[in-house]
Image (spheres, rainbow, N blue to C red):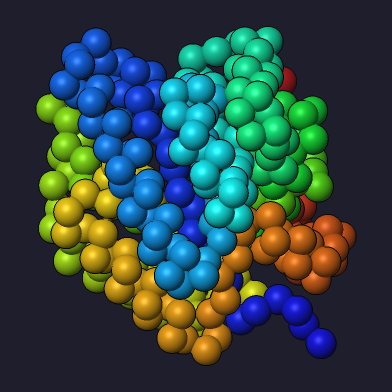
Length: 305
Ligand SMILES: [Zn+2]
């Protein structure tokens, strides 16, 4: 008897706060920076809605946010939610060496340990950016899952490490790891739709725009991705501003009324999915995603002139 629901809804909440504007948007503008403070008011609005629907969520909390708002982070813990690692200062991994990334991971972990005494089981790259070293580091630090994967829409994968590529040669697939990859997508995120920054992102879509996309995606996943996950990532500073929060409320209302949808934290879903999808079974069913069967060289490219 399968314990994996037909569709699991993971409510993932990015609490980037000030770090998003300092690091990802490189601002020294106090007005722009203050947008991150809306995460505090917005987070409490979101927490109240989650309580109303009895949903436990996964909060992505950079170390910088944990130190800025320790009481809020403790409140999130005390209200039954979990945390995933999400940078120290919402860094873009591509800007750092492997050694520097290691220090960033340690700093993010230290801050969460200091504030809430938690060691997250999951890793979510800030803005889902990775360097070619990142997956090695996820494994090195013992994270069990990574919520930054885009190879599928609503089904998890086992993550490969050591892929390599050039602009003129065959793709070289690396080795499969035990890390479970939870799917994400920019259409499943509120920031690109809503947030406006001059010359960077246009945003400013209506709440109805997000509502149409997310309801359609939820219906599709429930009908077509058995055992899958609807992993929507929202940010209180974006989704909890005024009328937009109604979009989240109506989506959760709809999902809670669907008898084939169950809410879970990412770690709970990963445990159930892994139990029903041992790695080698999954590999046999998904050879392309596992990186098996590719042709690794073109004969003519090795022929001497
Ligand atoms: Zn983030």
